Image (cartoon, rainbow, N blue to C red; front, side, top):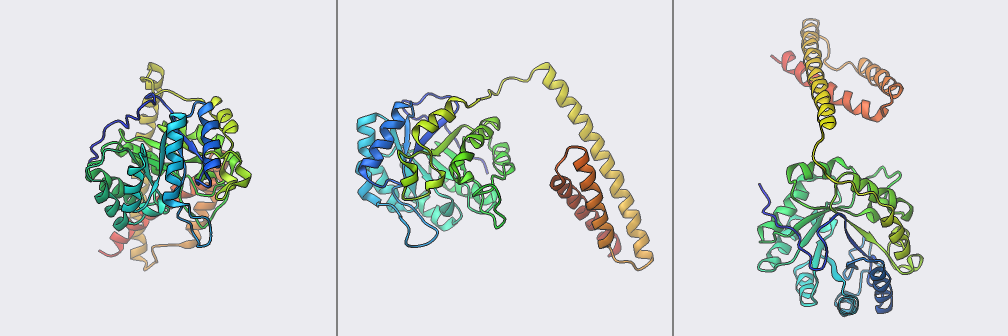
Length: 355
């Protein structure tokens, strides 16, 4: 299904990369909201974010003040001229946010993962002209993300965008939420006119990772950034470790290299032609490899041998992983390639064995 899209068209914000949305994780107090907003406005930030309703993993944490905080956001708009935005998760949130004059809404990862909740939000947005950004679901499911976007778009919201905030993983290493960049890249391939905004705060979970993640997002052609920035991050009531001061955010943005999507040059076209030719060779080699695999299947069938020979499979993964490392490639990458090749080889062999 296609998305019917229009530009975000945010008043007072130039249509250039990157769109920057910044502000604290949570609206804690009126003083904290105003101090953060004034400092960000002085750095040239045009759109202020703060969580009014905060879904938390466990009960007992600060879950936002709710509607009590909305007048603080209105004051930000009145006194600084910044646009204001917040997360919504229920129809009641949408109604209250729009009554408070929110200029943009976003949907959180937990809500995106629930089609019933997304449909309720979509129904509540019918007849409202407001930009909506949809975060990826907590689990790495592109179709679920697209489904959430389609529901919002189906409600008549054409000023629509996506937020890449990373994906939960049981094997957490460097990042709080693993980036899995190939998922937003595939989303962009399918919907090239859909703006994608990166959330380095939730991907990294640490303030020292925000700068490199912002740069990665720009290198991949993302339209914007949504960054958590607090006047006193160490004292934040939620997600203190991933928030930066407005001064630090200004430093990060000042050094950001924004690469333009320029027209393809003759040199680039020549290099891409080389890639296409090598891909043709790869496909030819894979075809020949599968042909040999099918011959092996005939042999196994004739000698009542099992299709999968675990010792041989382990030998291939170890050997090619080491070879890939020597060639400057990640062993994990090589392993994934050969796992995919082996899976297809087994599939083809099973077809022959079962005939």
